[in-house]
Image (cartoon, rainbow, N blue to C red; front, side, top):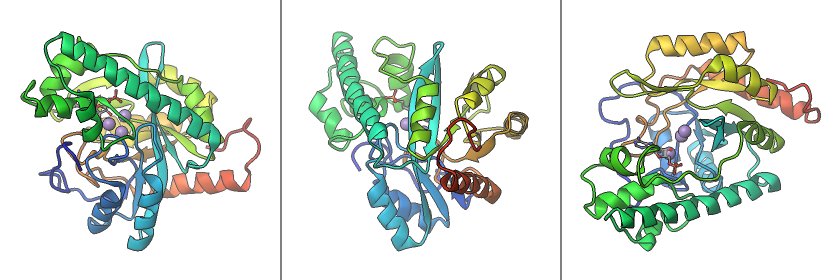
Length: 311
Ligand code: AMP
Ligand code: MN
Ligand code: MN
Ligand code: MN
């Protein structure tokens, strides 16, 4: 489980326990629980449908799928891909992706390599700034391979005593506008959508807004601009239920989804630690799952034309 901070299953004071959670991370990327542990935790919390959406990797999915079968819950194979366009960072979730799809795997492998190079560049900057950490230790913290991210760098900085907290690592050193931050290779959102759809998946826009725990909006995409563009590219849905969203944010996003003919999704973005909220900690209506499952079935029975996407 390494150094990524672990917290109790429901994230402290969170009391909501949803039957559906379509956004979570395992040790295959920057989560704190192994894929099996994550599924076991979900099952024990009464979650019936879970999606594991690791950053740029599907490597946790086979073990998770086996555990889901043992526990009698549904695991939706997922992935989260970071993209960038017009200087905006846009995250896309893929659901029902085929982990065997060669184009998807080629891209994910290349992205993970780029993540490694970028993390090493960040270590060089940190060393210049007087905060040296060992690359081998970062690898160990990340569980030996997988998808290396800034959370692993943050955990290693914390362990080395260079920062006092996780937030300090991001706020002072490795956050997007900080001195040790290095941008990494990212696809365009349109290319990511095409790739996800090509592997049999549905593409969903992740967290169009980000709110902190005090209910302050920290980031938002201009959806009137982006939704037509992403819909055109084959987007199926947007995440409407997400940690710290005030009710009005979910309502606003729901209205936009209806307006643009999109489905909706939601989840906790559980990382097994201090990030996101507790597993099952965001109430996601059962109908959300049914809508996505229906869209997936509809695509399966009509696999060919990409020209008129089934949403
Ligand atoms: P990366 O994909 O390597 O750029 O790292 C991004 C990941 O770092 C996100 O998925 C979050 O898990 C985490 N993260 C990003 N920003 C912050 C922040 N300000 N505080 C804590 N965690 C963050
Ligand atoms: Mn993450
Ligand atoms: Mn994200
Ligand atoms: Mn995520």
